[in-house]
Length: 79
Image (cartoon, rainbow, N blue to C red; front, side, top):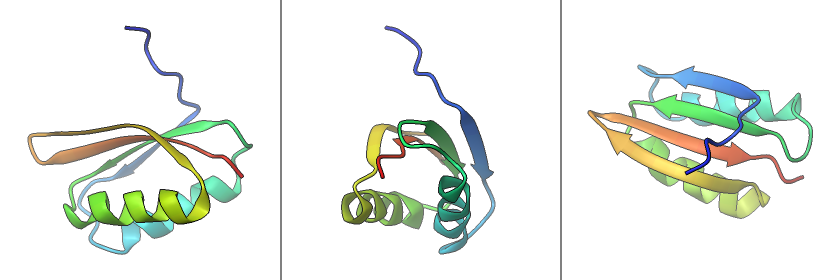
């Protein structure tokens, strides 16, 4: 499988809700449409938050995984 290209990475490990989402919003402001960001969190609430955020804003989650208490998302800025 081809590796997904990401232009930025956001390490939000150790941050509690709503900080991972707020930091993602800040990063997205400086990104161009079509660019991808990899977000890593340890807050289980971020799964629900990032899914809802993507659905409301139109951004696309390409991949979402969980391993050893870390949640990793590949999100593409769409607007």
